[in-house]
Amino acid sequence: MLFEQVLQQIINGLMLGSIYISVAVAFTLAIGILNFLNFTIPALYMLAGMVGWSLSQYGVPFGLSGPINWAFALFIGIICAILASLLVERFTYRYFKMKHGDATEHAIPLVSSLGFLLIFEYIILIAHGSDTRGFSTAFSNLDWRIGGFIISIPQLLSLVFSILIVAGLSVLLKRSKVGRALRAIAENPDAATIMGIDVDRIVPIVFILIGFLCGISAAIFAINYHEVSPYMGDHVGTKAIAAMVIGGLGSVWGAIAGGLIVGLSETLSIYFFGASSAQITVWGLLLVLLVFRPTGLFGHNAIGKGKF
Picture (cartoon, one colour):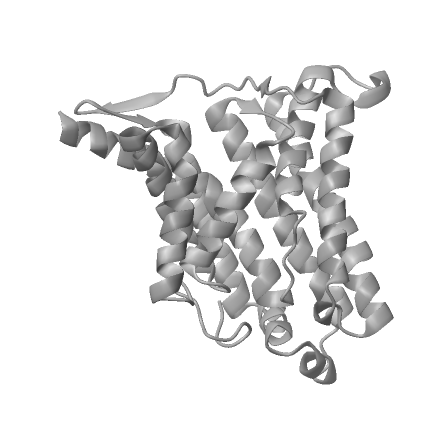
């Protein structure tokens, strides 16, 4: 009986890990390519979910439409996350690169991204308050029962979908012209410019990918857990950072492993020790790993060397 319950929690942990994977990869792209810890990533995740909920409940603001179908509303939420990410790129990374020559050498972009995080959160708080909101979809109570184990079909599809997205991203980085340009920028932005790569045109692609990954992850969360809130990004953001570090800075596939490990450790610790132990378990695991393997499971000693 205990074995079956533990196995069920392992299944739940893997499903939960699908939420963390995409956000962890978003952090990995920001740090691995731009050497820039983008604090707005949790806000982009929250923005996609809350915009999707708002449109599905009230429609377009100012009475321009009635409530929108939940799937199309989430799609618009993903687009909003991408646009917000491009706004961050314009007024953090690009602005300080134009002003100082290399944005990554200054802490100001990092602080300004934290400012965008607070701005996005408080805009949503002013508009909709701080309560958790229910999100109705067509995928309620779709479970697959196998020998006494319960597997949520939407969660299983979400896990597969998350891994496929990351696999596609990995192929993009390795085999496409844009991917080679991104890897060149990750190695050395100045050398990439000398080689003829238009850095100002390529870098926004990173922010588009970041917004897309955050939006997809928020949509997966809303579909599987049927709720959103203005603070949903805070919880997922901290766990995604832990997943990124556990997997290894700059490793896309490491982010997948890290996300699944964080999901497993969280659900198992809640099962054995209670909900209050989840944070201790995740961050304790991270600290132990950093003591014995500072680069993470699949990381490298130098950011920009042999990544992706």
